[in-house]
Every structure is written in structure tokens, then in C-alpha cells.
Amino acid sequence: MMENNRSNYNRITYFIYCINKFAAKYKLSAKDSFNYLHKFGGMLFLDEFYDVEHQLSFNDAIEDLTLVCKNNGGYLQ
Image (cartoon, rainbow, N blue to C red; front, top):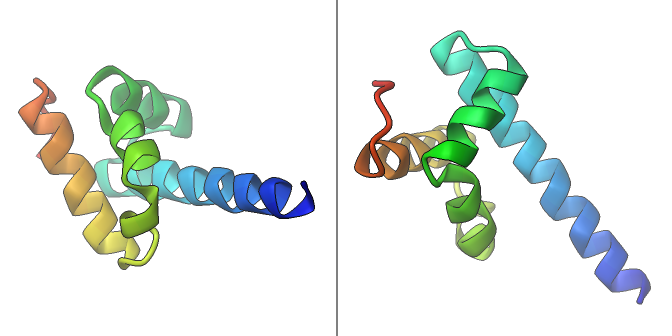
């Protein structure tokens, strides 16, 4: 059970870093960044592909999030 808690902590921490890095890149607040990522499938993508994405650089992850959101109707470039 302890390992599962650590795994969840790592996953949540990674999501927070990605939200904040995405916000910085597009000059958004953290709240607006999360809302955008949630609306256009970025958060679902991060959750589904965490095992792969967390091994990439944050720049690569942000590029992936940008493409996923764009493919789902997002407008940030």
C-alpha cells in the first residue's frame, strides 16, 4: 500500500509540474492552464500516458500536450 501512495504522489507532482510549465509557456495562470488542459484532453492524455511522458523532458511533454489539445480543438500555439 505504501508503494501505491508513493506512486500516486509522484504522478500528482508530475501533473502539477506540467500544468505550471504549460502555464509559463503560454503566459496563463495555473488555474487557466489546468482548465485548458482539462477541456481539451491534455489532463486525460497525461494520466493515460504517464508511464511514457514522465520519462521525457518537460519541453517534450509540453509539446505533446500542445499537440493533443490542438487536435481536440485547442487554440494555443
